[in-house]
Amino acid sequence: MVAEGVFAPGHLGELTQIAPFEMIDAVLATCSAVQERTRKLPARVVVYLLLAAGLFEECGYPTVWRKLTGALSSLPIPQVTATALWHARCRLGVRPMRELFDLLRGPASAIRTAGARWAGLLVVAIDGTHLDVADDEAVRAKLGKGSNQYTDASGYPQVLLVALVSCGTRAVIDAVFGPGKPGESILGCRLMRSLHPGMIVLLDRGFATKGFLNAVHTTQAHFLARLSASWKPPVLARYPDGSFLSRIAGIEVRIVACEITIATSQGRRTGVYRLATTLLDPRAHPASELVKLYHERWEVESAYFELKKSMLGRRVLRARSWPGIAQEIYALLSTYQLIRIAISDAAHATGTDPDRCSFTTALNAARDQVIQAANVIADTAIDLVGAIGTAVLDALLPARRLRLSPRAVKRPLSRYAYKSMKVDRRTYQATINIEILTGSTSP
Image (cartoon, rainbow, N blue to C red):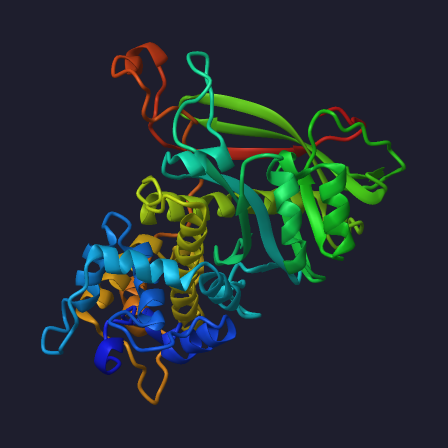
C-alpha cells in the first residue's frame, strides 16, 4: 500500500513508518513549501526522493527514482526526466530538509536502553569530520581547497561537519556544517543549543579550549575532556583515587592523569593522558571509571564511518552548488537518523544492546524495503521491530572484543609504497592496563 496518484512514488519503504506522510506534509506546510498546483513531482515526493538518495549514494537521481517506482508498475506512474528532478529539488530548497532533520534528531534511546547512560547521565560526544564536495568554481570560492608541498590547491573542496552524537545508540542529537575555517571548536559552539543538564559530553583535545569548555559549562552539562600539553592546571587538592582538584578556563574541575599501556602480540605501546571533568565527587565518579568512560568517545568516530563509508562509500557529494550541498547533507543525516531509530527501536523492544546491531545489515534491509515498496503504511498495531529490526536481530554482532589496529595510510598514492612503509595493517587482540598517576601534572 502506497499513496494514491502522483504521490505514490513518495515513500521510503519501511522507514516511511518513522517519517510518515503526515510528518512530511507538516514540515512542508511549516516551511510554506507545499506546491501551488499538483505536478508530476509533488513536494512530498521530492522529500522522499532526497531521503532515498541517502540509501543509494552510488546512484544518480534518475536511478533512485527507478528504485522508488520499480515495484509500482501496476500504477500509472508519471515519466520524469533528470532535468525535471533537478528543477523539483531546486523548488524544494534547503529549509524543508533542515526542518525534517530537526524533527528526527535526538538520542533515539529510552531510560533503560543498554549502554546509553553512565551514572545516570546521557553519554554524548562531539567531534568533527570532513565531507568531499564537487570541485565547482562557486563551491571552491566558498570552501577553499587544501594544499600540499606540490601545489597551493589540491584535492576536493571539503565541508566541515561537527556532530553531537549519543554514544549508546550512535544517533545524531544535533549537527552543524560549514567551511573548515575558523575550525571545528568554533563551529561546534552552535551545538550548545542541544546540551542540557543530565548529559556528560566527551571531548577530544581539539575541543578542550577556553571558549568551548566555558560554553559547555554554561549549558549545565558535564564534560570529560582530554587536555593538551599546553594546559598547566594547578593542584588545589588531592583525592584518594589519584585525581586532584584544579581550575581551568575559570571552571572548577577534577583532573585525572593516567598511563595507558596497550599490549598485543606485536609489542607494547604506552601513552599518558590527562582528563578534566566537572564531576567533582571522587566517590560517586572514581578516576578509574572516568578513564574507562572516555573510551566511549570513539562511538562518534564509528558514526562517521557509517555515514562516510557505509552510506557514502567515500564518494563526493552529488550537488554542485552550496544550497544543493546543504540540502543533500540534511537529507543524508535524516536518512542516517531514520536507520538509527529503526535499530534502536528493535534493540529496546528486545532488550538488546545497540552496540551489537549491525548498521550495514539495517542499511541493506532498508534498501530492500524501498525497492519492494514494502511496509510503507503501518498497520493498526505498531511493530517496533519490523522487517529491518528482524534482519538486524537475526544477525547480531558478537559482544565487543578488545582489539587494536595501528593507524596507517590504507591507500597510499604510490602502489609501490606498501613495502617502503613497512606497516602491518592486521588487527590484533589487545590487553589494556590503566595506571592512575599521582603527584604529577605533566601530560
